[in-house]
Amino acid sequence: MARTVKAALIQATLCESPTSPCEKIKKAMIDKHVSMIEDAAKQGAEVLCMQELFYGPYFCCEQEIKWYQMTERIPDGPTTKLMQELAKRLKMVLVVPMYEEDITGVYYNTAAVIDADGSFKGKFRKIHIPHCHPGFWEKFYFKPGNLGYPVFETRVGKVGVYICYDRHFPEGWRALGLNGAEIVFNPSATVAGLSEYLWRLEQTSAACANIYWVGAINRPGTEAPWKFGEFYGSSYFSNPRGEIVAQASRSEDAVLTAELNLDLIREVRNVWQFYRDRRPDTYEAITKP
Image 1 (cartoon, helix red, strand yellow):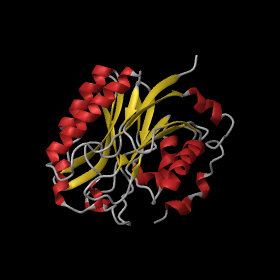
Image 2 (tube, rainbow, N blue to C red; image 1 turned 135 degrees about the vertical axis):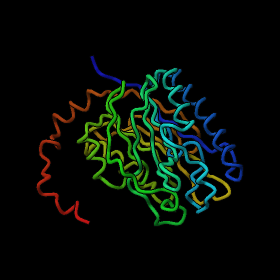
Image 3 (tube, rainbow, N blue to C red; image 1 turned 30 degrees about the vertical axis):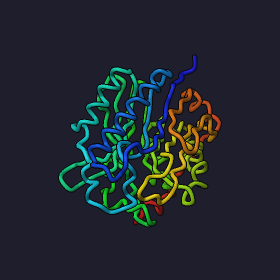
Image 4 (cartoon, rainbow, N blue to C red; image 1 turned 45 degrees about the horizontal axis):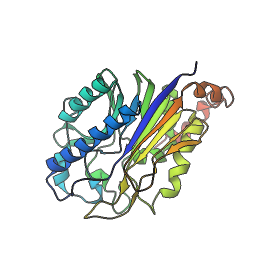
């Protein structure tokens, strides 16, 4: 009998003005996502990931200390606790991208992984931090991640996370595969005219090259007052052959679900022996500064 998992991705437009107080924005977005997670549960979802920095706008298009108010401790902050309760009630694995405070003044772009029994499994901190294009001033907000490429054993299988800009770096995708990932989620906030042509290429290529399932999430719409670009949604699932099996719309809120056959990983790896034929002894140059 095939080992299948019903997975879900959420893409959601901002439902509160960025000029509002941070707590008001945060509450509105959390309330919206809780409703969408419950909708996913009604559709039978067993594992779900939300978009990058899910409880706020993509504030990195400006450099304002106001947004430091969006940080929380993980796992001791209120959003992690809320999501643990929700995961337990719905019997769903949740991947929750948040703005993490480690110590005062040290902040990370992080995703918490919560198992279907409500237990906190761990977190991934975004490794690669961009600061090279107008509107993506992330080094003002985030320290580069220092937890490596963990893979979390959950009720649905082995789950890995890569965040947005990370997807441009193939080394981390491979590290997640070597660490045993069966499903890798990539929550993102990316705009048309910059990387849209890469959206269908990079993550499907990563799924194919590393032979696991990928869930790619992007927020939709524009966010006033900045409007520096259109977040083009188009969240999707790619199978281990690099084929898109389900995709959301470009501009609307969506709860996208798909059945993931995890047995397909073994089937494809028995044909394409990329892991067997690796030559790490020849790769020294790519690890040099």
